[in-house]
Each structure stands twice: as structure tokens, then as C-alpha cells.
Length: 278
Image 1 (cartoon, one colour):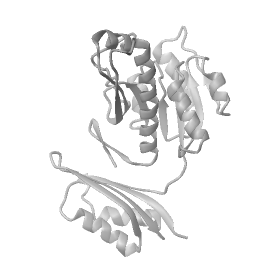
Image 2 (spheres, helix red, strand yellow; image 1 turned 45 degrees about the horizontal axis):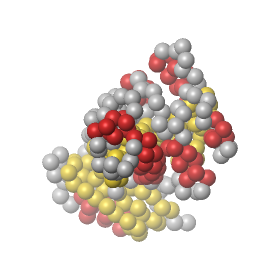
Image 3 (tube, one colour; image 1 turned 180 degrees about the vertical axis):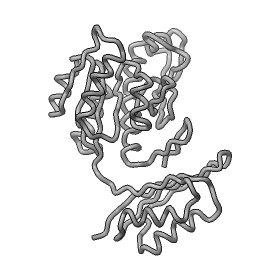
């Protein structure tokens, strides 16, 4: 029975790479359903995402692909499957609710293993969707002590991605380093202009004309990890700061779900502190 696979390659750029990789597919009798490639000429880096169909042994195909690409290349052969995610939240419902609805409607190619929150506020919402809700309060605990409890909970699950759906706690370097390239976050796009409490009120007082959101991978540089997706919408003088906040939340939830889908479908390569998105 024919199988489908995503082949992801990032390597040093080299003449003839597309030809050599395509010849491996041809020799295996595989059909190329789609193919995208990109070369960062400044960095001399090559990126390629192919979707192929046919009969193949995954490990043998991987071995033969590695023979035709430069030494040190990162080659992955991924047979599509439903991936698993864990969501972390605090008390804002818009980003979490959007993911839960998309999951319930079958739009999300993943299973939600659990929602972990440092507040109880969202329990009723989550349990309406028959998703496990785990409350790990942070009161009276240091950041490290609270994270230790969260990590103990995370060890109970197998997952591909952690989604911070407006999780309002800063993660320690130790936490982030455990899951490189696996933690997604969303924030308003006012940074670094309006930092701290109530950025929408700050933006209103400054008279901004666009608001937006940024979804990115989490690194130890707060809110400065590789960007996956962004969007903006116009606002005007008729918006008070609460109108801006409501509009901003709409953008945030859409951008986060878009970024999550890109990651789940293996369309994102991390390239230094930026991404290549196919």
C-alpha cells in the first residue's frame, strides 16, 4: 500500500541538490505531490520540503537521501500522523478557546493531551470539550518551584508541541532548554514599544493606527524567538482602548492557530533566530 511522507532537508547549499534528491525519489518510484525549496544566499543554506507518495522503507529512504546531500545536513522523513500537544494557560480564554473549537471541529491535525494552568478560571471551558484540565497553582512558590511541578506533570504525557495560550508566566532557561523548538507563544505586536501593564491602553494613548499579533518559538530571549506567523488590522480614533483590546485578542487567536497548524504540518524550519515557512 502506498505511503505518504514529508521529506525535510536543510543543509549547506550545493549545486545540483534538487536534482540529486529528486533522483532518489525517482529511483524509488515515488510520486512528488508537492515540492518547495529556498536558498538563503547570505548564509549559504538550502531548505527543501517535499511530499512524496509510494512504496518505501522509511529508514532506507532516509539513508539514501543522506548520501546525496552535504555532510552535516539535517534530513527528516516524516510519515504524517496525528501529533500531540499540551496547552498551558492562565486566565484569558480567547487563544485557548479558539484552539479547543478548531480541535473539536476536526480542523487541528493533533490531539490535545491536557491543558495545564496556574489558575482555575478556565477549568469549566476546558472540561466542556472533554479535555483534561490540570491546575498547578503558583501562589507561595518561586518560579523554579512552580516549574518543577509543571515539569512533573508534563512527564506524564508524550507530546510534540507545547502551546502557551496566553500563559502569563515567564519560563526559566532550564524549562526552555528542555524543549528546544517545541514551545509556541503568542503576544501582541506592540513589543518593544509598549511593555508592561495594559499595552492596549498605552497604544490608545499614543494613537496607534494598527494593532497585531506575533506567534513565535520560545527561546531564552523573552518574546524574541523565531517568528512563525504575524498579522495586523487597522484601527482608528473611534476605538477606545477596550475596543483595541478586543480586536487585538481576535488577531492573537487567529495568528496562534495559524502558527500551530504550520508547525503541526511540518512547514516550519528554524533558521537561526528566524524561520523558513513553506
